[in-house]
Image (cartoon, rainbow, N blue to C red; front, top):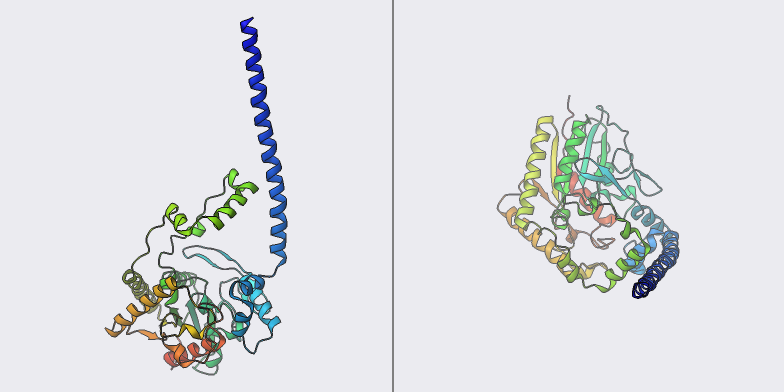
Length: 378
């Protein structure tokens, strides 16, 4: 009798527990299905909006349009859609590069260079004086059409100069700094590309990405099953909004960034290696230190002021570079950092990317520095 009652209690307990587990599972399934529908609607709305919508919303529509005085607003929207709607793809050694793209305002070759005015063919012909320009997104020309980039203005200015046709190639790549440019330069040479002159435009990304080639964003492990659930996506979204950034940084420690001194030394080391390789191939090489809004520039002159922490980091880096330049360490680097003082506004189309007027001024200084052009290699 006692055994029967005990068995009944076990059965009743088991049925109760099974009911709780079943209801919990049903609730989780219903919750995930509901959130999946919501996420689907949100994703569809986001996908239906052009990329320019988010750029204009982030900076403020009128502020963005004020940086494009003289441009039709529809043209600015279309150009921003093309510019910021693109993606990066994997590349050995440098980790990534600009993906091929064909548009009205932005065109990127499958070989990795952005088109400029009177774009020469690929591969470069030995009958031309082939001039390669390396740098980050400011060299690529984020925020302006193909024909208003630094390499395009250089190309236009060099028409008819030298004993051969000058063919300029824009190998600027988003977020690249000197070490990646060095690797790209060497990779092109290893592939047999004919290069006569190489220009390297640096400064901004040396300090913006001091710890890069950790490549955190490129090494994310595949999401686990639980992380793929709509409920997990919802929880992550709530966490991003609610959790203090300082607490998140504490939970996700990253290696400390190198010091400003180590960052500049890295640049100097890359420069030495580039020059050594260039000399062994008989290539003329020039280095340029670019303007940034944190150095000898009044922040009140731009509608896109920088965050104080970012501004101070850049300013400190540039002041250190200015100091070692005074000691002769930058003797082979053309100093363009003060160029903003010679150009009428607008100087920038966002926090760091130049206006067409700035591109033109930088190109003029580059052309002055590399003239006269070297005689062609035999």
